[in-house]
Length: 259
Length: 351
Image (cartoon, rainbow over all chains, first blue to last red):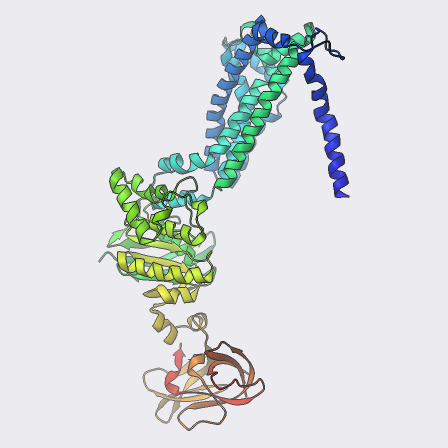
């Protein structure tokens, strides 16, 4: 019985989640400007378009810049918030956690409008800075959560042991807490990067033509001209996501063998 | 003498009191064990000594210096944890070097000291291993080396053997005693295992419900327990309630089930408990001569362990006692009528 459920869920999940991707992705190599089957022939033409035609590569670079910036700032903000929260009592932790996680539940449209308005008033709209700041608000809670999880998993006796050997709070943090919570920081960093890298709603409100990110270019080219290049982008993004998932898996495994 | 003086410590958690007026005077280089059942306050006292818990009242001095309020980091006390608390991301070498790096010793000195300690705990060949690659006993020895490498004034051990199997425990007890003799550091060990306490310690503080019941050598605790709790907790004992009454040549003991002519002159009349250890009782098939106490009893059951047998006996009064009997020439069967006999000189009065 359980085997039947297992196999039927597997088949269902495959058709629901994976099959559409497998149907669409070959079109990246289709020698026709229309997204239709049957395929006309095999070509790398659309990859060439992606790496040479104006908006694509520039917006990929923009996305990378914003995602890296977001990753760094979110690590600092979310990581410090998590470490500070760990020092609080039980109720303090509950309240602070709720506060730090709250940006996740705000609809990104609301956040986008609010940000565009606020940055416009301050005169910093349109640039990388505003994008990084806005994406950090979305990404920092994820860093916060993953760092919290790994800090909570640490044996409190390790810190006590280090204290009994004369190590100051700061030295203990550097030599014991931080290295052992590293998988949490790394996981949080990956999440932050991905969050920013494929965020479209807030970016639509904030980006100027010069700072246009890859998801925005995708979005507008979907509306304007439906070319196989977008399938190329989808393929490349899928590969990047797969790499990230593998990296996450590795991190988790490393965390487990250590504890 | 840099002795450790614990004076009149009280500890409250909210409204509940965990320690009641605890005082101990521990000499330099002594091996002391805090022994008690769970909830006796022994771990609380250890945490206070380590600096992880504050006292509500009272003081701790080391060599005359008040250290009651000192943070753990500046106490210079070594600490061995029940769960070892080795740093999983460091090798054995880096674990042991940690307290020396904190103290900013030169690199070559650190290496020498680490190797000295590994030599002492016989783990030199594991120097580059991670803790996860070591067995429980090896991990505990690394923890010990790490807690001793910085020459602490006092070494605190929090139930260090509780996670190890019995054979390993006995080996480590022996090793710990030798290390203690080699280094001469003051050791304070916490355990609920009375055998471990008796094997290793110079003196044992028996704790119960947040109080020190008795602080003495293993011999005195066993032969002259100061309280009924100690008598019960350390080893097996048979306790008879009764009172001291005037007899022919002084005070004698009279209880429900027996009378013992003691002829004491150095203690008051009144209520008292009388304790006889099971090994002081001889099991006889005929009533002994006068001068020995003899109680008619029936054998309930026996546990044979080769060198001797432990009997459960029921006295005429219905009270059950335990007694060891030689088992060389057979064992008394259940239901056998015997006499439980002991000399008046082998009893201990409590209270």
